[in-house]
Length: 287
Ligand SMILES: [Zn+2]
Image (cartoon, rainbow, N blue to C red; front, side, top):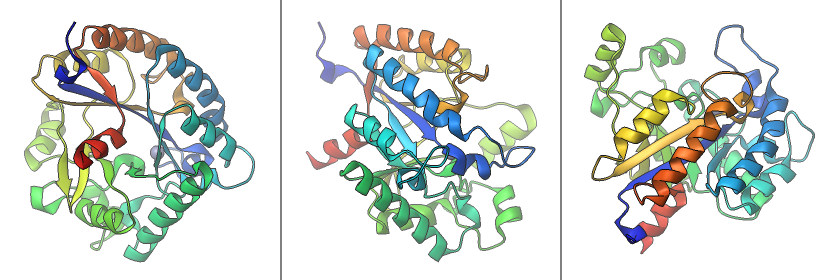
């Protein structure tokens, strides 16, 4: 049997745990939503499923949810359960703010308040950050455009390198990011074409980052993407979804999650892919 060390393709599994803080700030049509309670209810089921399939995940949690209080805004006990089950708890900002529109002071405050609330809750360091809405996309050095950020955030909107510098200052060490080159952006806008390939670790303002690549959820496009990635020499597949969408019939539904877990475990047993956590990259850097 091959040694696990030879497995070159890694998979990171993220749950964006928005709660009612995120539902109140929904930027999709119709404004605020009321699905916040589902985040907690469905996470109970997810903890069972992850244990059954022995798949570790990173839960990106809004820090305010870790403060004392009631659902649908708070449940520190559940966040501790996520941690003690062996999953990684990451920060998803304090109250699911739209980061491009914040001032630098507000940005620093949400990053620090979230890290502090989560660390006090789980009594362990929180190293990883997942930006709400996957924004900012703006990365001037890579000519990565973000027209909506300029429109809604004004000319002083926070860019991705500015976010990463602020994360570094606040003591974070890893981030999941998203940006597109101008060419990729034009291909998406004009032809709905999107090139997908495994990501590698990159450094933005000295912070270790990995770029989102799989489509949200676990339906056929995500499965096909994973199958394509295991043919590569090396790289990272980043799967992501929201607990609150587990029974809403979209690509994040449990009816797609179970076959995805089963196929992922087949590939794991064939030593074609390895499931890791963001903190595992940091351990490797320290070794
Ligand atoms: Zn979110």
